[in-house]
Structures are given as structure tokens and as C-alpha cells.
Length: 143
Image (cartoon, rainbow, N blue to C red; front, side, top):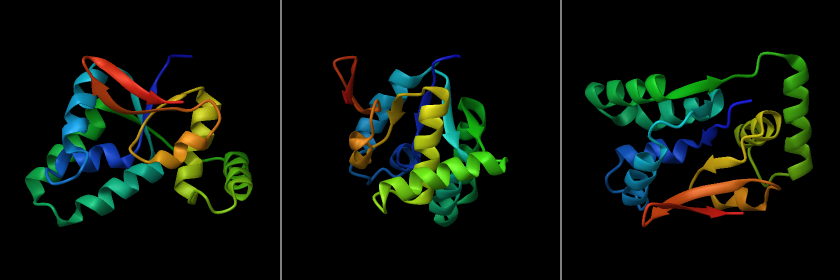
């Protein structure tokens, strides 16, 4: 299975929002992630779409282009997958919302331990290496 990087909606939001506290970090991360296989879950994609509703059409088009050209979208179609995600949701007892549990499911299922996100709650998830910055050409991970 190809190593991939699962991305969180916060990465795309910080990229397009120049006032976002993580905007500069995101620019470094995007440079690092160039030519890497990136994935985004369908639920994270929905969060991006909700985030961008206030932007003008040109910005929306650029967001959509970025997403469709550099990422593969992961979806949940099967009832068995849904049940597994629901089990993860129950196990974390409210620490993560359901869409976050979809991310956790795909990290386990596809062995994507590299997760690009500014959300430090993922630091508590076994095996996950949250990538949140690049310094001197090296990625910074929380393990």
C-alpha cells in the first residue's frame, strides 16, 4: 500500500485565510507536501466547502482545483465501515466529532500515520504522527 498523507480541513483553511494563525506554517507545509500523495476524507471536504461559502467564486474555484488536483477523496459507502467508525466514535466518548473519527478510521485502515493537521487532539491517538510545521526543511511531527 502506498504511503500517503491524510490532510485535515484546517490545512486548506489556513492556506486560503491569510489572517489564520497557521497561514505561514501552511505555506511551508504545502512546499514540503508537494509531490506527495495526499488524501482527504469526504467529511473533511464538507468542512472545507462550508468554510469557503463566504469566499468569492475565483477563490472557491482555486480551492476546488487544489483539492481535485492534489488529493484523493476517501468516502464511506459500506455499512460495515460506518459501524466501525461508529465504534471509534463511541470509544473516544465525545473527544472527537464523527468526522474526526472517519479520519481515525482511515488512518488505521490505510496505515496513514502521517496526518497533516493543526488539531492537537490527534496527538492522543496511537501511532498518529501529526505534521503541523516545517523548520529548516524538516517536518515537525508530534508522536
